[in-house]
Length: 460
Image 1 (cartoon, helix red, strand yellow):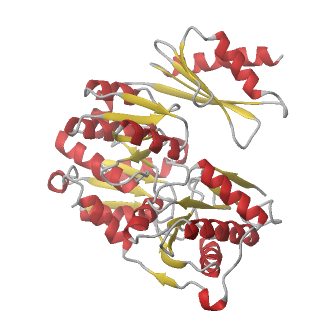
Image 2 (tube, one colour):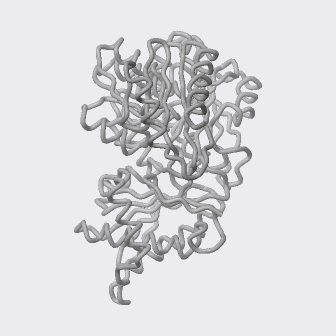
Image 3 (spheres, rainbow, N blue to C red):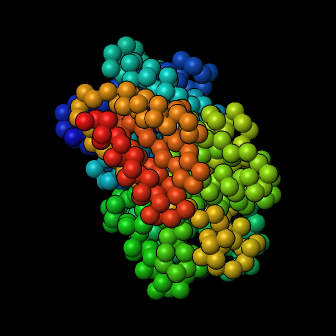
């Protein structure tokens, strides 16, 4: 059993002993602690809750809602929803904050509490640490009976989310309708199974082939939207002669596309393509994390903007986007953050903008993909002996490459002329993650293997 408390929330496997897994005790104490902090910082007593479709969701939701009521919070329960929908609902409800019940791309035995502030954005690391401290110490009081909160169910936010997407000036519904796209959708049997088809219908897409779109939480494959997990979508695109395939993760904040030839567009290139469209209409700056493709930098430069890198983690990307007034940003895992909508990864926004771009360009998805800067990535990791000084190890690698362009804002990233490599320690495992990129797959793997060999030599 596993319980992980980090900047991205409190997540764990369901079951086991308290403190070892995500048990009812852990759920209640951290929910109540977070609720107390929210109510103490806001005049609002409202907290928004929504969940993905995983099988433990109803049980977790019942505990979360009850815990919030027990500390005097009034709960707006969206039921089956998405992460970006809850993010939009928080400011719409003028709420003190929100909780999304989802373990994102993790398998079905996992669930999690993702914590939002009153802007509908993920809380900071400092705020997260306070939640953990308060929850572990139980240093707060529950409410008396006359002060208990109430629950209100609200299923209107699917339509509200779609309406907000359609209202974005760069979403071209007329062009999408005229393009007469045929689209296959794999939503891994979670809430994207009705959110994405409903959005496509609103955008004027008449032909939608739905696979794994029953929101019953029975994931038919590993829910992370990677190439090896999307063979069913590839087959459906080819079988039906679809123009495009769309895959999302269980909470619908990650988005990847399948080209008409059954090949993956590339999760790294979701953001690149959307940024290419946004920058062609509204030039400006962009942000992604250090482990994302260099193609975003190239596209940004082409359109006259400046590219900036942030530490890995959505909250870090959002902070940097605000700092440099980025017009588009996100992460290379298929996460699109469009500030004109809200500061959160949103697959619905990504779908609408990508289809607008494709409809205006004409031609196939593969032809457009071929027009973008071509890079290839390799992702590796080294398992280390517990107790090894990882910071010291990275410092030695930094010294070795001190004459190369490099960044230390999140581990060590070394930018060579034609490749880059990013070394960062895991927050949850004794490993170093090693991401690299080059003009060919071989180049990416070669630079990664060289760095790995040098690390192993230092360890010896």
